[in-house]
Amino acid sequence: HLERVGFIGLGNMGSRMASNLIKAGYNVAVHDINLSVIKMFSDKGISVKGSPREVAEMSDVVITMLPSPSHVLDVYTGPNGLLNGGNLVRPWLFIDSSTVDPQTTRKLSSAVSNCALIEKKDSWETPVMLDAPVSGGILAAETGTLTFMVGGPEEVYKATEPIFSSMGKNTIYCGNAGTGSAAKICNNLSMAVSMLGVSEAFVLGQSLGITASTLTKIFNSSTARCWSSDTYNPVPGVIDGVPSSRNYDGGFASTLMAKDLNLASSSAKELGLKCPLASEAKDIYAKLCEDGHGTKDFSCAFRHFYSGKDE
Ligand code: NAD
Image (cartoon, rainbow, N blue to C red; front, side):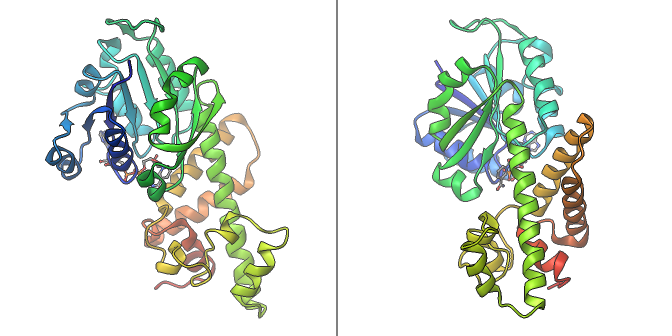
């Protein structure tokens, strides 16, 4: 009974994820505030709705893929939002795949379960929400090879697996509501810090006279080896086809990394945890955005923060 899927947020990631659902045979209805992406879908004969509420009313499950917590809150609880002031006709299941903080996820998850469901489905008495952010960029969204990290009731996750596998290769169940979001912001915190660590070490190494390609060989057969050194190296020309080798275009935008570091940093602050690297990395990405590099891939810290080049 999960045939009608609503999809809200058809940006870089969402448009590709929704297309994979359509390819897998789901009956998909979409909504976005950007009329040009909406047109791409309506031109293909896909059902387009004018508000989140209209999407909800004709869907068994609604997936959201929006930029940040404020957009997600707006789509769920705003006027004509998914939750329709607490009285749902449908659906019983909501999946948020946006990268947001676990606090926002938990707030929404309880707002969802407090809704009255007018049309009850067999197994679940109350509407539920899963947080299911993704790892993997635009290419993984396109090829249906994303990794989903899912928080929420386990039996609901199990019932939803076919939906995830039509958009992704791996789905990992993390635990209660908010744990998927927690996994995602921790992954990105660690990825940012390792990217900055590799960038810093390469700037120092090159200044000390070692070439980037030699240092890469050393790192990749030594203890400093990581994704930022062996798969997504920030130094132009070291690895073909990655953003650093095409002027830092495409990839994962610095603005999105800045947003994710804000989420990690404010979560740490709220919990009273010391996370000095999160706050340092947050400041570096805020500076990169301020200096006009927000649309460049986040590996551009190598050129624009450490090397101070502005081409
Ligand atoms: P995007 O900015 O390309 O797309 C967001 C879409 O949401 C846009 O089409 C926008 O018009 C729409 N939108 C905004 N507010 C709306 C509203 N109120 N109602 C309806 N639609 C609205 O972003 P993206 O790159 O697709 O990323 C989406 C989420 O996925 C973010 O949280 C991001 O951090 C996360 N993410 C992105 C990547 C990546 O590589 N781009 C990878 C993993 C996770």
